[in-house]
Length: 212
Image (cartoon, rainbow, N blue to C red; front, side):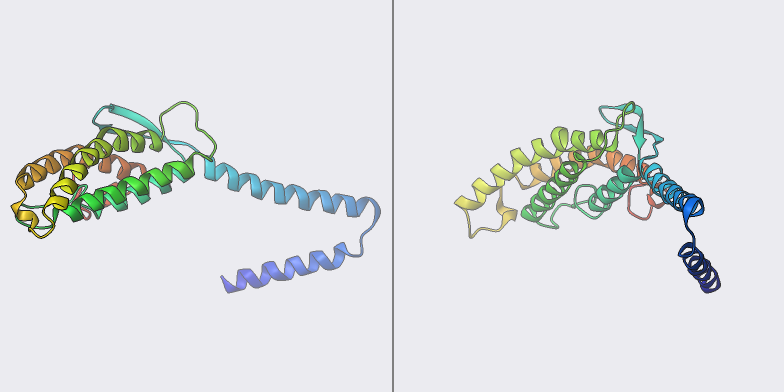
């Protein structure tokens, strides 16, 4: 690698040396060639970043669908699946363990994180044809996380405000919350697997507890 860098550096230096001594047609030819080379490099980089591949996944509400995945959306999918795989969104919360308020806060943080990614993605070039990663992310927010949080955040907050000194284990709806959380997790896991496939993380599904 060092030898290649030295050779390239010497070549660039020699080119600059002789370029300074050129004039007339030769100078225009050299300038045009360098400009074309730079343009080719930029075009290759842009093409790579916007290249679209297709990933077929099976998720609730979508059945089996092929999603269009660009380099940028692959990065988005990776960021989402890392957040999901490390939170109560897909990781078990056993009875008599963990805290309800922490579980709600974790889901709320995931909601805000994904929504911010979608806001950032709104500035990128749209990909025609197949649905993209953002469609699946929006589905997760609107059909699953938002309804669950709207319901349980209010119910727990009302109880806690009226009983600030009581442990949450005395909350009469503790077990019902955990039961509905398990239902939510069952809906979110297939989506997490889909994000992992789009991110090319499907080889790590067992490691992050998302084996199909």
